[in-house]
Length: 525
Image 1 (cartoon, rainbow, N blue to C red):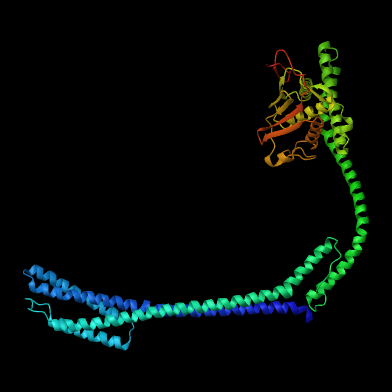
Image 2: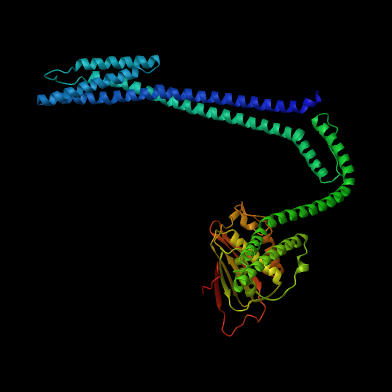
């Protein structure tokens, strides 16, 4: 039990020393500040008010003889009355200054000297009463006696003020020196305490932690220090020794466990792929297959109920729509198979490139989508020239079908979807632009990831595989795909494919054909 408390006792002593040091430094600081305050209060409460009162007395007593002389020389009663009022005001102010000086605590000698001045001034004022007519002559001796006494008192007050200021400065310097000494001593003691804690506690603990990290990294050829200590650190060092021995045993079995874990991981990944495929199939079959099947069922019922009234043209038209619906189901099945091939990494085995006219593939994809979604507005702005690339027709149809399906699915009913194509000297550029819900900015970097769906697609059926399939097929064709989107305003997907040299030349130059499909698929320009 004594060993278990050894480090705690050391730390307690260190903290107790720091606490006592803090208390001592605070007490010394308070004492020094108190000394400075006492010296300042002497100046503030005694010498400054006394200087102010004596200054007032000097000013007022100096003005009095001039007023007395003016009274003697006054010619009119009005002038004499004004001077009498001035002398009465000076008497009142002198009395106020005397009362202010007497209200301040002074030494007995200063008080005796001030009493003598008051008596001399009273004697002077007895000799020079305010009377009518004015007295002739000026009692110079009485006035000078009072002035000399006031000058001596003022000089003593100035000397006292100077001594008090010097004492205040001395107290401040002494307090600053004492506090600096205490801070220096405190710094030395704190540095010593920190050095002791670092050497005896912190450094050994850091060393043990570093050796445990090395043991965790399978480095068993290390030396454990401190096992001979008889405190908590020694107990930890001995425990690390046991841990090192166990780590050696674990390292011998790690390779076998890693191999077993790898096998289990492969099996788990295979099971997850199978489960995901099944879930995607059920999700897509429950929604995507329902629409073309409903088209087939509706036209079949219509042909059965009106078989006697349908013309050959109407019958052919409905049969064509049934075939388009069947083609859509076939396309969905191809998408499912393509997704499975992507997951299994076997897409290259089903890639059979030949020269392909992208204009024809795009136009056919638009017709299929229009048959599946009659209310959709598809605008074809396609280059009229053959845009020939080297590619797989089936895979390219899946790419265009997925992009068209997404554009229609994530747009409000009737919103236009524009499909454009153009060619330069080296590449074909195809874009799909909609006015749908758009893609939130945080989701755009991940839009082509497998199984990822945007945060604003809640309630819209989808598997999260379509755009990943599109990007993979575009990569197989040595092309590129980019997306620009603004949430709430729509998206634009741009695809670029290498153009076969010499196949896009025409004597008439490049033209662009624009078609708009809306219910009946009418040509607009």
